[in-house]
Image (tube, rainbow, N blue to C red):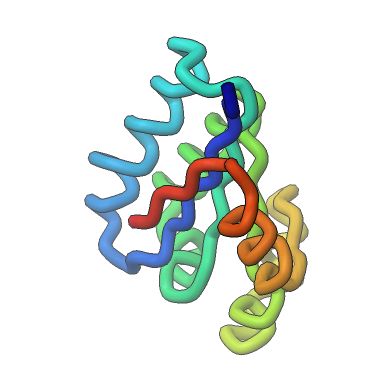
Length: 112
């Protein structure tokens, strides 16, 4: 059975993150629903995560609980926030190919 999940978070709505994305991810890890969980932060959500201290702290909680967090470099460069994201301890990489690999694999992909 495939036990990998990739969550793509694109929304600039903070409630989408705090009430849906964060809650599902932290519970999926703590309840062992998935062995391997990756959060891909893409587009407007990237900007929100650098402007909202609560979201930044929740992202760090996810990371400390073993959830892989990856930011799209093309987006972060476009917003001019790549350095800030890296200083916060998150991975920044071009995500087009990795996302395509997730979609072509048996991994599960969920988008918010």
